[in-house]
Image 1: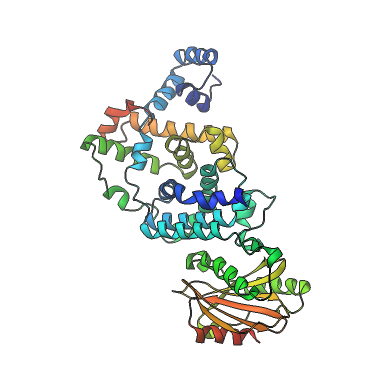
Image 2 (image 1 turned 180 degrees about the vertical axis):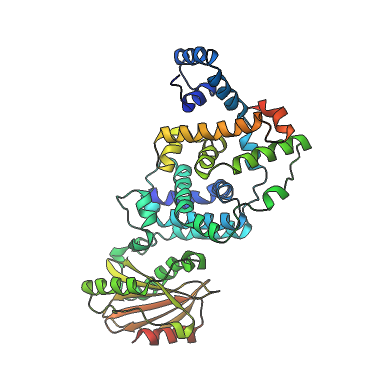
Length: 256
Length: 177
């Protein structure tokens, strides 16, 4: 029985073997009927795959094109939205995406020039830009695990005691809890709690340690609206596809 | 940040290619859209992890991981795996025989087990080398070669044993394109 594997035969047929090895295979194939049959099958599999598989691919949907261009523009103009560099391989990153911490690097602001006077505007913009990336599909299939959220919040409380121990209950507003993530903004920890309601973009509440009182403010943005307020020792923001009344209700549920 | 900016800047240029791969992986426009969106988001979120090199390969790897780990489950749970529009829209300018040939080739590829189909897509359609394909799929080169060999043997057997329509049996000698 010969020791020619199908892989070697494919390489031989595709002309990828050295001339010496190729001659050896030729001789073996001529002397072995089974091998010759196998070769005939492989020869017959030389087909116009590219043309066949490209023939009916529909064009990129226009809405998708526009969406990707917008995302790219935001990411290009605003490097505030960058995940930290990780040493693990991509498989680890992707499978552990939910647990990944995120870094909101405020480099576009220029940390050395980070002034309190416009800090709340920069904070708002960074969070809104970040949330712009998230469409309903991003979180709709996440099975919101309240226990995991609480566990994460309790861990974050060790970092800063003023962080809440549990996510707020937004069910009265039709939103269900999805997840808690740890972000960073200007070297400060940020708690991001994400909620989802059918037909809406994800709602995010972000909390960051800051004792400097900010004035409550509702702002309309292109895709989402935001409401910032001071919640004890925390600066808080809610970003969602909702009006001022609903966002203020969220703020009340989180606490002031 | 210049290095990282390149992903965001170049991503729109790769959209056509990743869309085509998404469509061929999922065989459904709806799933392809979801897969492409998720791939772009992941690429932008993790652009700091791209250290130069082959961006196309990096994007395909993200897409394949997403397909394997997330989207495929959704598609299998709800959407039909093979979309009707695959057979419906043959708006090619080629003659009817050529169209039938291409359709038969497509059907044979789509009937392959997924691991073999993916390797065939990446090598014969996308033009990745065995080594690049192995890196992209996180498998040894030998596995790529063996999947490819099994895929091609299956297809060749089908052609020669007349399991496909006559047009393919008559025109199989056209070579890879």
